[in-house]
Image 1 (cartoon, rainbow, N blue to C red):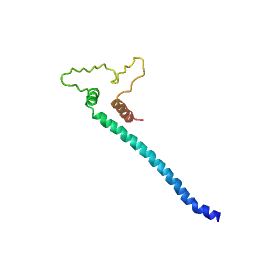
Image 2: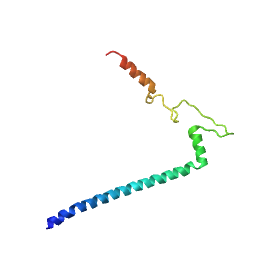
Image 3: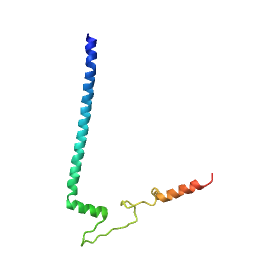
Image 4: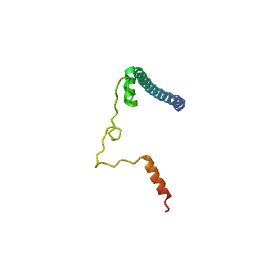
Length: 110
């Protein structure tokens, strides 16, 4: 009799535990989604600010407001502001040189 009761309760208990795990996973997903919505709302508010848009246009697009004098200094560096030292590691060649070398290598007879 005890075995019959234990067997009859095993499946519902297992389902209950599986459902509780699924609920916990869904709650975690909901928290992540709420965080993402909050971040997107902050980003929307930030993009609604005119001064932020002007700063980004100047920084990213090198936009110059009417009446302003803007200068771009070209130092021959890399573009990220870091200068390479003469004795430092060699920089990688452009992609087209690498491609052409591979074509030449493939064309050579073995």
